[in-house]
Amino acid sequence: MSDLKDRLRSDLTASIKARDALRSSTLRMLLSAITNAEVAGKESRELSDDDIVGVLSTEAKKRREAATAFSDSGRIELADKETAEAAVIADYLPEQLDAGTIAGLVTAAITQTGAAGEGMRAMGRVMGALQPQVRNRADGGAVAAEVRRQLGG
Image 1 (cartoon, rainbow, N blue to C red):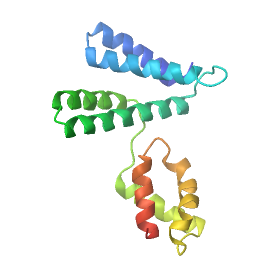
Image 2: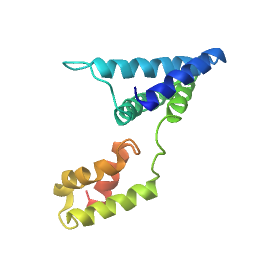
Image 3: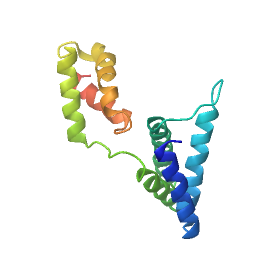
Image 4: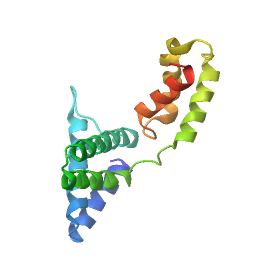
């Protein structure tokens, strides 16, 4: 079993004992999402820590989007709940990259791929070079927006 999944399970036990309802329900939801990912496809498999971080990133993004939707529609109490769940999930994710770091990585990738004068036609090539560096550490939309900005699109 992966270390991260073990940590989630032990933290779930601790939160249940501490009667922390928010943390307990969030960890149950995460473990359920991990189990669903493990049995998805033609045959079940054990997820690696990297795969689990991917599942957690997806769940965190869902919470952020739901919080935005709830706050836009005036449902502040539900938005707060989603934001609190996202904060619990963030405890298990790697440190997120800031905008300055992302801009530096994009500049380096454009130089590395030789895409400086090609404009938006080179976006796929630049994103392909960036993906291994930013996976699970930055929102893909933010990275794509920075690539578009630097390529002049």
